[in-house]
Length: 68
Image (cartoon, rainbow, N blue to C red; front, side, top):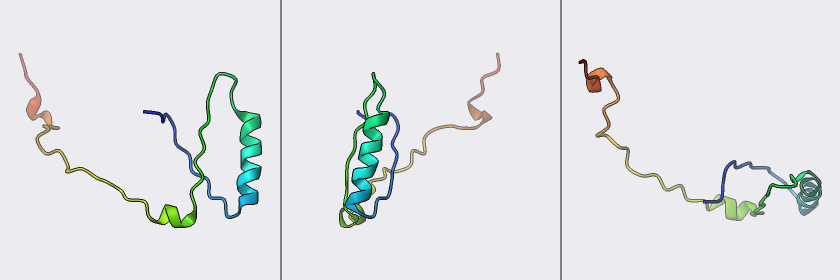
């Protein structure tokens, strides 16, 4: 797994992307890493969200409390 934090920035033009990249290159920590993925609006519109079934067998009440 690569992510620790994920940030999103909307850039309407390639010029804004280039400007943002220039700023990021100046801000990258000496012992850190910044990964950038540029996605077009059309590609962004095709994102699929995969959501699993909710887990229902977890007891999240005082029902699981054991008094000794």
